[in-house]
Length: 272
Image (tube, rainbow, N blue to C red; front, side, top):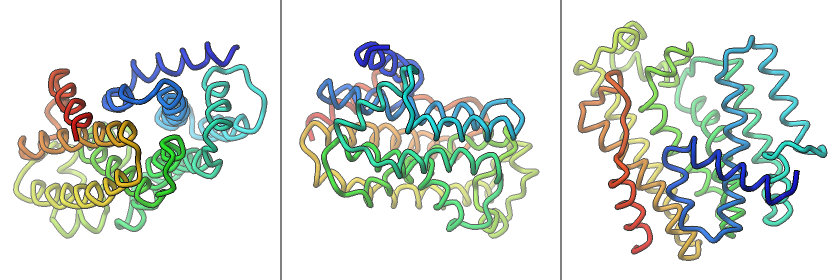
């Protein structure tokens, strides 16, 4: 497959699958937009395996195969596009391997004792995306890029409590569930009482603190890259605000932003 055709495919996948990501990258120049789409497509491939229905050992085998393919010739459009993006922008191998490690962790661990454990996981599955993308943006501020990725993952965790429960996973730290008097039976039943709201307000506060620190990355970016990052960060912040306005009821239907809201946030990113 040609590099051009491969990029067409990863952009198509990103537009179809990414709820917020695709809006942010619209403002990037073509080559950067394509490279970010290649990173997203690879991350999506890892997620699809880790969250799929295969037996655990088959998942692990496929994830190891994805890692091996990073360093081997491939006609798969995701790897063709990603190889070109890596050669253009110096996307670090470590970040891509961390993504695979995060997928493997999902096959091994479904509970997290405390935030220190959860933070390590978030840095693999989302902080690594930030580190990979910041190479494309042309910044060296990998620490804030990783922190921003963690922030977005924490918002995903808040939003996806029911979906994760149905996969047998609870990402909310066990010690914090205990401290706030929330049991896994409450998650199973979708209870949104006082204890749940207090717990989730604490989670939201931590996510916002990470978001604020991560957004200091903008200081090191050119105007279009900054607009991209501020757009998808704004979309995640708006999602968190919407969840909070519903009393953190994440059990009663999905939380979606309208296309008009997304366009307004994208416009604000361009005007900042």
